[in-house]
Length: 247
Image (cartoon, rainbow, N blue to C red; front, top):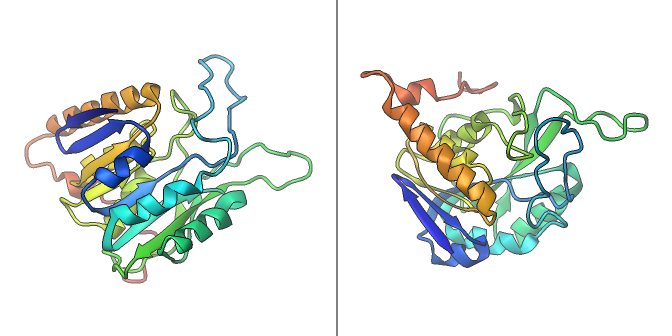
């Protein structure tokens, strides 16, 4: 197990199953576990083809109970998945004691390839939204359809937009809170925490992506440090609430 501390971000190059029982309780979990579909991009023609993500051969539902135990009472969990595995993760969260609420539908603005002759092009992914206790949303009652353009794949084959995770963090935590991501990947959740004034703890089992996340976290802190005096970082990075009933 390797542990690196970069200011308010603590990251482990380790299996989250080893790390989660050792952590202090967190105020929010935002995570993007392997979908369990053995995804390998076949669209690369110039850049290097990333390997299949670790543990992506099936949904590893054993991750769920330790995640639920790591979250404080009256806190939330956001878990990204796709339609085919949605019910498996939903039931695992319920069995672990979480209350599953209305899911978030992420409109990626572009569709996947898939079966181009006999199926609809899929333009959305799903985010399970679950409670431990009954936490209140911080910024009114946003609607559950979020239109945020998908990030192009790069060194990581399935990156999530920083904007997507910032919205989860701003809706369900407060500045200074400790946020957890047990499947760090290229570091998106950590970056979203830096940009919203939260602390972060996370795990990444792959040394390749762990190193990438460390570099990205350090680069984000440098960019924040270079902001002009008087620049209101949190106003800049507070995403507009789509369809909020409270204006």
